[in-house]
Length: 296
Image 1: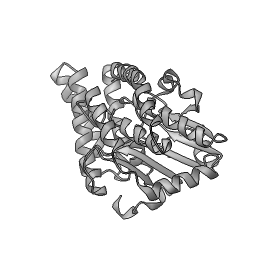
Image 2 (image 1 turned 90 degrees about the vertical axis):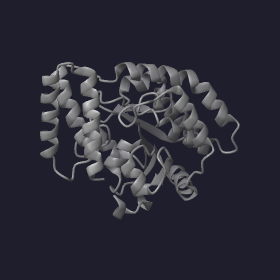
Image 3 (image 1 turned 30 degrees about the vertical axis):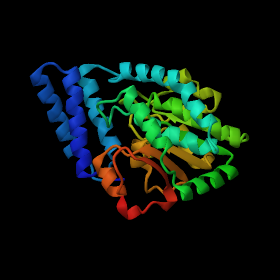
Image 4 (image 1 turned 180 degrees about the vertical axis):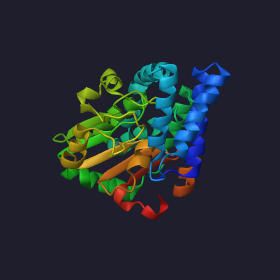
């Protein structure tokens, strides 16, 4: 999905927000925003919003020396979601279809996104979980999901955010319960970016019990196939029978690619709500091969 004008304004606002947090000198902040705007102006139209976002984060890192802009939030929400894990598993335990409710939990967890939302709290997370557990899941996409998983030997699961990764663990548990012979690779970001999950986070919450953990080799908050590592490309192109893509950033970088991908995310930006004609914070479960490419 190419960047839209709305994407650019959102990236600039996020850069300004981070600058307020990490740059106290007004002149230095002006220099930072000047570099960001010039860099965006020089970026090709074909590049995605996550690609551009990564470039602005690199500029801020070069000025401040800060490597991980959301380190405290990442630690906090991993802890909070681990504390909530048993409650979420109890919700699924009461279900007539544990896998479909695990999908709902995984989609709801995508609300923990400091790159897209400002005011994240446990109250909001619990509200979104309740709302999503009562929402309809795309029946056609779900039928195709089950059919594809039943044939798959290898799944590539693309993670998105910290905290949310606990919900991903629950979904992978249910997938391996239903399809015990499948091998899952769980892919994180290669370097710190926003509050996205890295390998350390994945091990911390116990993903390694259900999947082989890898990273994609980049600091882009998505999956840019031109930028990922050779190891990741090998799994993506040659080994994965099914790809489960979590989060809006992965959707923005992969939609339109034509691969065997199922997308799970909450719609958090005005541009995508318009494209998909849905309400903000709606849970989305989409199959790549069914998406109308003229919308992207």
